[in-house]
Image 1 (cartoon, one colour):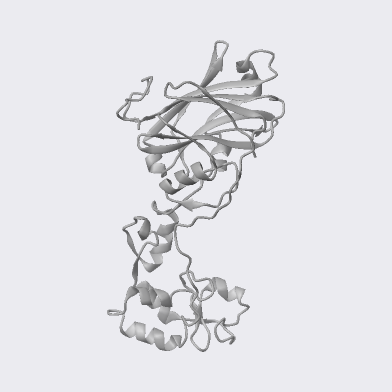
Image 2: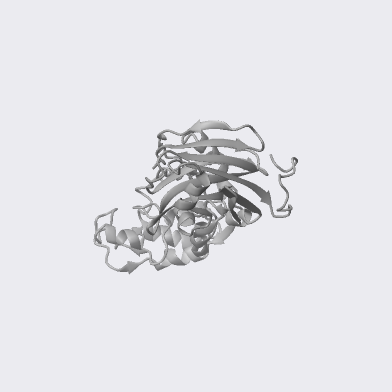
Length: 335
């Protein structure tokens, strides 16, 4: 949801302010995938008793990909883990799908019963397979039963789209998501490690739960997402600004940022490390990990008759080895 009536005046790294008025954003829901879907193979488990016997007797020469196909559930096409079930004819499927097919073999329609395919489970123990994100750069190889646990936290797994204004299901690597944010969500892109934004809202008394990604910054060869939003914190309406890093948590800790808002001789300052986009927007917001401004204070900073919200938020990003007191980043480090 957009912050209705909000406008933003933005300047970056000393540039003159250019007024930007945001209208209702177009929420795109294109699905992008960084991995190809698996195709179910109807004949995957035909004559499975003979297949398993052949595998057990020739594991030294059987290609790992062929063995891996035997371990693919014919219903959901996911890799099977113990308990692996089979029917009287030797067709196998995973324990999750056993309940979905109402105890009927999806291949021959015979009753499944409670037969375990112990031979195939034993074969799986001997396998070492690459991470499924190897095409994205992961070089690791794992025992079959350890592979799944690694893939849940693999640093090379795709990222979710960090756009907060819609439930976007797009996933991909960082360069792909940057293009997606720019082209599909029409997010403003800026180069530089300092920023100066003015938030304007014509009727600050109307505060609804709303999210708004303002802009993406490119500096130090990395990308950062600046969020600004209004929501109810208990009974009190508040405004919040925070930064997220487009990368993993370990990399995010290499950077720090500051946010500052103030007027009339008063000032609020926030300093911290940006959160990784591995953490969802809602998780960061609900942890209150950012600059939070109560509405009364925001109206005080706005001055005038307090009938219009005018907040100027300035900030900067720096690497931890830099001097946090420096007013700007070194030119050769900001890119």
